[in-house]
Every structure is written in structure tokens, then in C-alpha cells.
Image 1 (cartoon, rainbow, N blue to C red):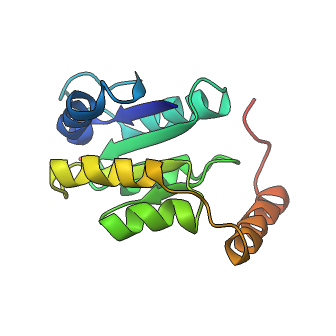
Image 2: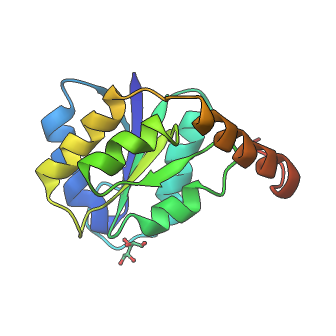
Image 3: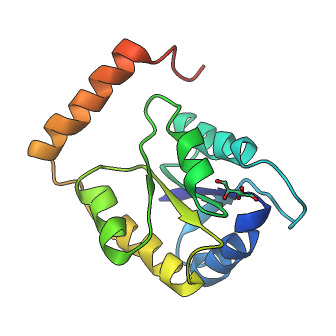
Amino acid sequence: MKIAIGCDHAGFKLKQHILKKLGSKYQFIDVGTFTEDSTDYPDYAVKVVEAILGGEAEVGVLICGTGIGMCITANKYRGIYAALVYSDETAMLAKRHNNANVICLGGRMVDFDDAARWLELWLGERFEGGRHLRRINKIKELEERVCGQGFK
Ligand code: RB5
């Protein structure tokens, strides 16, 4: 499975930690940023999202200081379901209940080893469907009704 990963300056150290720890186990597409110089998180959210919607990656990881800006940006796209993850349970439920295809992490908020574990927990889960599918379908119906044109 290919995982697109992107960050801003505040998420750079955590991105590097994840790549070092998990880079030999999973195939990451690193879209940057590549330094700790100040940059703008939406630029990297867009790169990760477009890698997913363009078919290069199956899922994505976005890291900024809090994870919040990345999450807001990614969720502007039709077909992207980005979840802010901050515990083992939110990591697992993001997949089981929400079928999130992107997780967002707060590089200034979390322990780096915890964050790497959350990423693996999320990857290891499966969407439960059932009543959760009904809710996801309501989100999709909203996308049709209120969102603009999708990607491309
Ligand atoms: C950058 O200072 C910070 O605002 C950004 O990384 C992020 O936390 C925004 O949501």
C-alpha cells in the first residue's frame, strides 16, 4: 500500500521520525516539506490529497503543528475523509467507523512513537460498514449537494 505523507515546518520532525521508523515497512510518497523553514500547510495537504485522488497513493498522512489546519484543508476535497488522530482509540475508530483515508497528526502535540503506532493501528483496521456506512453515505450525499466540482 502506498502512503502519501506531507507536513509543514511544524510537522517536519514527526514526518522524518515516521519515515525513519516505518519507511522500510511501508511504501511512502514524501511530498515534503523537506526542511524546518516556515511554510504553509495547505500546500502540502493539497499535494497529499492529489496523490490519493490521482491514484498514486491509497491513503495519506498529514502533519502540521496541531493537525487541525491539515484536516480542515484535506476535507475540502470530495472523496477525502481526513481524521484528526490523537490516541490509539481514535486511530482505530477513524478507520472502523469513519473509513478515513487520511489521518492528520499534530507534530507539536504528540509523542512521536505514539504517533507512529497510531498510524499502524489505523492501517491495520477495516471499515465496519453497517450503520457506519449509512452515515458515510449521508456525508457523500452532502458532497453531491453542497460541494463544488471534484478533483480535476
Ligand atoms: C504553524 O505555526 C501552525 O499554525 C500549523 O502547523 C498548524 O498547527 C495549523 O493548523
